Amino acid sequence: MKIGMLFPGYSSQFVGMGKELYDSSRVVQEHFEEASNCLGINFVKLCFASSDVELGKVTNAYPALLLVGLSTAHRILELYPEMTINCVAGYGIGEYGALCLAKGLTFPDGLYLLSKLSQFYTAMREELSAKSVVVNGLASRKLKQICEEQNTPGVCAHIAIYENKHDHIVSGHSAAVDAIADSASDAGAGKIKEVDAIEGFHTPLLQGLAEHLKMYLTKVDFKDPQIPLIMGINGKETCLAKKAQDAIIRQIAEPFHWDTVLKQFASVDMIIIPAPSKSLVAEVREHFPHKIVVGVDTLADLQNLRAYMKHKTADEPLLEERDFSEVVGVL
Image (cartoon, rainbow, N blue to C red):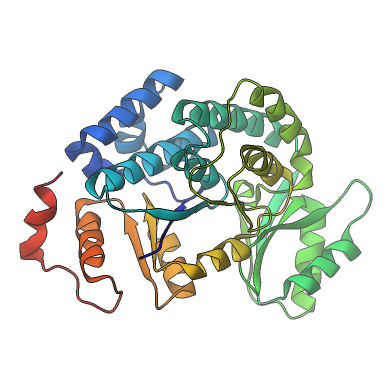
């Protein structure tokens, strides 16, 4: 069975994520301790006893998502030492978790870079008049043409995330985004909805942020990933440290090709999403209705994973509730 692992990005965070695994796993607890020591943040309090607003701050959410995602992945691999992960990827900043699991980046270095990235981003956002919208029901070629037509020197917006064939996120200067949204509506687009600009992270407006982060990369030792990493900037696989390093820098100011990333998972039989939001799991299941897609955040999720590993098909029944002790017994 070929298995891919997909790490969630910003907006997947929620208070209580990873709580059951933390309470039952020393491996997960050790990750929390290490992250708290590295950044001076009480991640137990932040992840389990704060608020959506507090956890949603990028300076908190970015490292917290890496922590919970990676600790969950390592817990899964501890339970299933025979499991082979054939490829990894992440949505947005989830790429850091993918790179850490592939041993292209250490956990402390990943935390360090995300901490710097979130600090720079918070400061830069205060200086920008920018926004993001989701445009549904319009082909990327047509939407890209509209962006080019509406952009003017100094006031511009671009497709930031290629979600799927007809759904995209456009980010940039507020005036340009508004003009593009109006033109897209006139061109036959369906629903157009404003979203938190954080979700439209991948824009040329943040090129300065990318340059700032580059200065800190000299302090980080990147290794060749031991698991093929699917890069968000182009949907291609790499096992080279330099390409992986370039990918996480370039995704700051370049479009994120989520649609192309998902296409690379067509060759796997099972997709595991550690510490996910339900919406991400639902999206991936909709994209791959005949594949096994397992989100893992609770003990019950580990139960489902154990069942799928046993049956090796999405069409087989899961373990019944009475079998849950089989999972609990190895936690």
